[in-house]
Length: 412
Image 1 (cartoon, rainbow, N blue to C red):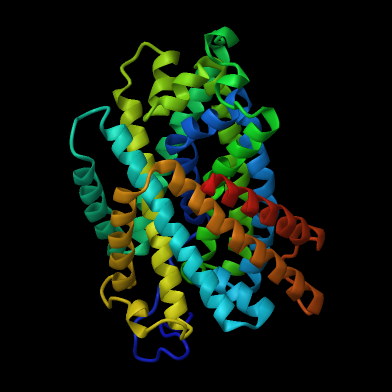
Image 2 (image 1 turned 90 degrees about the horizontal axis):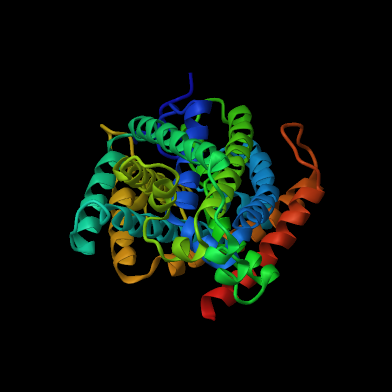
């Protein structure tokens, strides 16, 4: 049995290895599905029009190269603050490693802001209330669950993920048999991509890329995963493939049955699609969407707090960030700080800006991580799970190009 104490942390509580392979897959899917469809399908459709499915597939291709790189690195170095560890191993530069770790924390915080915004959008379909009140209630609830324990947090994530995935599969099934909407009804590409098809798909893919964040969250709980060298790579690949299939199917069902102009303007796009596909009341879809975005926010908070813990554990941040509560065995200080910053960000920035900022931060990190893997692979001496060298090369090139495009989108 592994020791309860990490080297260098003698006498202090540590994280528990309680996460199984299935729980890890649900952890990744929990943030992908909540962020990608329930919160952003309208924004992606507004950019790419009827080519929204292509935007999701392009984003999946870009994410796939980097996801495969993360799969190998997570097997090589199963540590919290994974990206920072990977960059440190690749570049032997502690300052760059710290910068990468902080960028991942920032991406988790901004990403949670997206989910907070999505939560309010769907909740307002049920009851009218001030946005700030919704942010505060959600922040308190997420902080309590995240601080309670990682096993409890991931069990909640798994249950919610199953519910939201079932709802998305229902949308796909209903969309397949529904009467398609005519282009004249506002579903032409001009309704969602005024700058042309290619630019529209690229713009949509930048937003849709955000929908695939989750595999990088998975590596940051590696110290709590059972048999991580075997479990991590397989779980990352399964989560990415599953999310891609669901995204493409839902986007196809959405643009096939709902005018682009309506999707782009809706604060609750999944409820809109559902209401056009069935005569049943949309309340239950609102409730599913609410739980989905809560799920995504919870995953991001857990991830960001673990990165802060990992950076502290490696001496890059003060010990305060790495303190683990002896009863819950979770980094409570880091968790509460992350939730507080998320609360402020959600109240100040619009959804699209939050999503684009998250994409830029992650794409920049992914570029560095892929380059780090190239350097590590050139040294040899490893016989575990590997991917061909061309994978991180393509990952670095594609992530770097998308990072530049994402930055242009932000400053436009």
